[in-house]
Image (cartoon, rainbow, N blue to C red; front, side, top):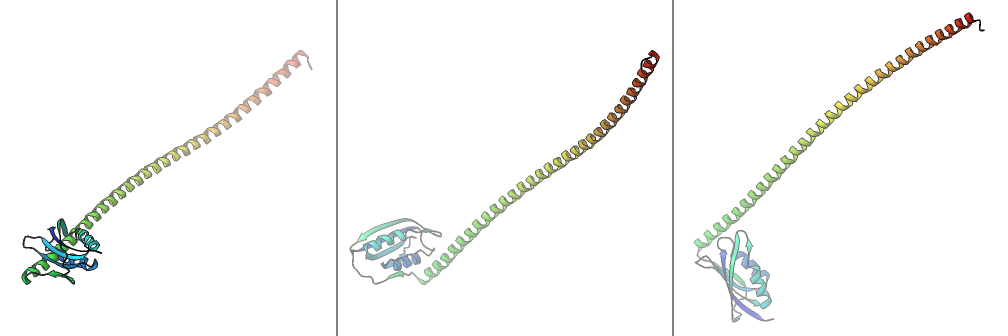
Length: 205
């Protein structure tokens, strides 16, 4: 496998965010040798050597967009392979600069954590708001159900009233039928008596 050498300049949010440490970790994983260092203008320079396939994968992997790291551009230039590196290392700056970088990196990750926490709290608030809406709709449905049950009770009460009136009407009809029967029977008896008298007067046996 061919050995190649590449010099890479990374631009974006790459200083004070732990980018060099991520580059070093990826280089060791992909068996790439060389170094990484901060530049005074805020960019990061990487010089690396290794097998062609490993270098290409390395270049793709360091194009990081994982907050707080955000690589906006990678300028890659290939150089003649020299084989001068045995490991991959971070070229540190002055102690004060490295301390500032460390504090800045920590602060950046804390900010990312706070932002994620804010996002989670915001989503939680949205979920609670939706839950409140669902409970409100449930209360409205229960209120409508209560209204329907009340109307049903009113209809059953009216039905009971109608049944009572129907029973009263049946009683009246039965009484009326009994009265009519008595009247018919009395009239029938009277008619039979009158006919008997007429036959007696006429001498008809």
